[in-house]
Image (cartoon, rainbow over all chains, first blue to last red; front, side):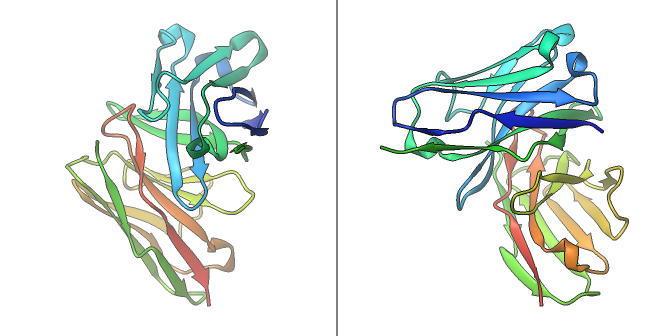
Length: 124
Length: 108
């Protein structure tokens, strides 16, 4: 069964840093494009960023609210995706989900495998 | 940025009812529209991709339609386990994906 499991969420002060991890199993992680999506309390889902597979160039893209503060990386030898979060703000408080990107058509993308998420709380 | 809206924001229906949720995009997104189901404490679930394609393993009572700016998700015979929040998501402006605000479905 294909699945992803996130970890690393915690309570952190504004301005602090945190690194989330996501371990994948049941599919070929090396060829997978992956994303982070967060669920903000009372505000729904927000895409955070995406990383292509290394065979496809490993390009990273980020949503405007996190660009320059967050960084996505991957270790294909460990089937693990990371999200390094720096300069955290209270607005970053959310459940962070790791997802696999499923491509369709010319450039359609959906998120077909999700983890339950890990909770990040930014508060003083 | 492409903005997504959904209506209604919440609804209450009985088991066996037909339920329709609407999603509207701020510009033409062709059929680059996906639907997800979220339940508290569980991993979100992809229901529909490309506006009308049913994801593998999803019950056939779920269906999607639409193109351009207007889309619908229909549950033909509501079941107790369908109590959840449903989100649409556009991928026309990939990778700058955006989600709708969600529609909460409750069982009467």
